[in-house]
Length: 151
Image (cartoon, rainbow, N blue to C red; front, side, top):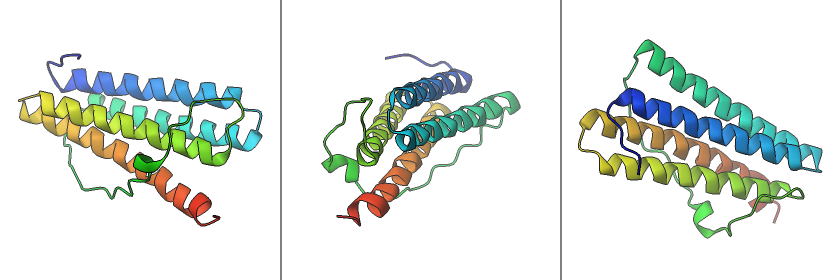
């Protein structure tokens, strides 16, 4: 696993992870036959762009005041089968994919937090994990609202 020497290293890593997510969602949007699903993935990509910009601003302004908070976890993604990205995804599959991706990002940041003994680095990783859990919750709520209630 990558080693980090300071908070700037973490922020660079997190910004690259956000860029990877942007690229992932844009690629999926480009593959979609369904214009509504393509628009959904484009929206996900825009959100990841804003997350990257936020991290960049934190780095540039040296505003390292991270807070951690408890985010509700509906645990829906724990019970849904993983979906492979494909050109014919429907809205439900797109949401499942997004939830699984955000859960993986959350787990990564938690694992990194557990691997450091530096209190500031630990706080930074935990704050990034909170951000990913917020993203996952948003997708879970969307799934609950538009998929679960329709069934």
